[in-house]
Image (cartoon, rainbow, N blue to C red; front, side, top):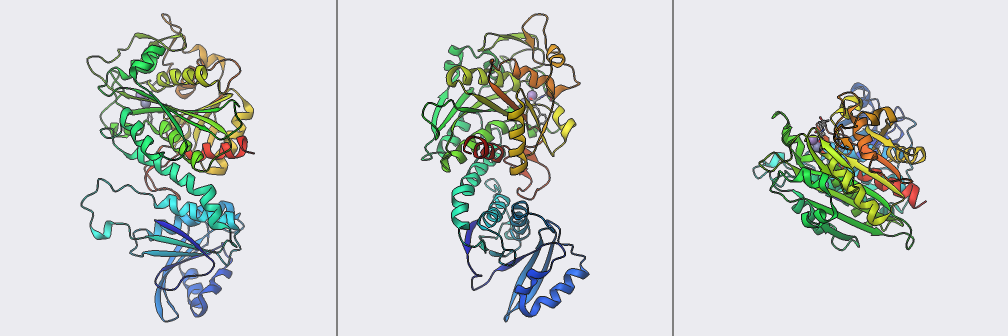
Length: 490
Ligand code: BES
Ligand code: MN
Ligand code: ZN
């Protein structure tokens, strides 16, 4: 779907999207002779004008019949807050409606360039879909909406969108694509290829470690997870140097388990197909780096994707195996399904040894327990630094990728002590997300600020949201992008 900006409504056929702020019906004046009938219709339909409320009618617009979509923005809601919902709601109603063009007329709202650009952002994000494997769609199952024209924003909206948000859309789209693709298509090697092709020309620098390279470095934890699969592991390094020369980078590290069967500690069959998106953290890291490169962020960032497939098999690791990590610490693998932390352990050691980052933020679909704690609304946030945690939470609120802080503490750490090795990879069932975070913390070196985002409830949505269709959400890209903008570029 294309997005355009204009100062006034175009000629020709289109669906008109008119925002209404709560009970304030003043924007209806744009409807001329139809205004009175529409006002009555909205009352009869009990239209309240709250955010995401909609009402659809057909009006006689100077002799031609036109679809009118009234969208509520809420009363007294700031434009920044209302904008993305407005754009997203408009697209959710029009995308399959048969209309080819939608015109969102903001002129009655007095939105500035940034708010208008964010209407476009919401619209474009909501329009993303992946029909590659649907070869038999009937005409009425196909998207019809080809473009959205945004009217209003007092000039500057197009530029603002192109510079600030179009790169973010590119990043989110890459992440959603990687997350959506099934595991027979996206596995460690093809994840790397897909990202490489997608970021070509962006200015990102890529480095890829294969099994032999990781073996040499002693990444026994990551390779232990991968050894049951015929798909060879990869470590993908993405570098963006837009900041001061030689300034220590910020590291983003993603769990990239391209399929998680559980390994020998195999998962139940029901719902296992969901584990194709167990690479959502790595997907978010790749998408964020793409966005940051495209918008030429003034920051030094290194992104690490730890890519493995977790399979049972004749060569798979067994419960009870002891592996030696790149850090030198040893781990007793009690449960082969607690594999994400093993991958992250070596990935964070690698980034610390090679890039000495000041800050590490890792993202991972790490535990089912975080779903029990926070459901699908918030991702869990764990950090050894209050300032970092606060800034990440602020970026989460601003971007919509919301985070809820969870505790870390010594008594939890003790729960992963092992009688045979330095630690074991699982604690008791209780506090399962916390002991997983404590495990990763054991690989964070002194003085390094670290945050861990457990996004197991956020990578995939069974229900559409305002800026995503059901399926891959792209969670994490906007969080990291906003963090960089607020903290590293400010
Ligand atoms: N990838 C899963 C976590 C997960 C579960 C993500 C459900 C999304 C939805 C992870 O590798 C896992 O299997 N974790 C185990 C840990 C347990 C064995 C300690 C879990 O949460 O059950
Ligand atoms: Mn698992
Ligand atoms: Zn997993």
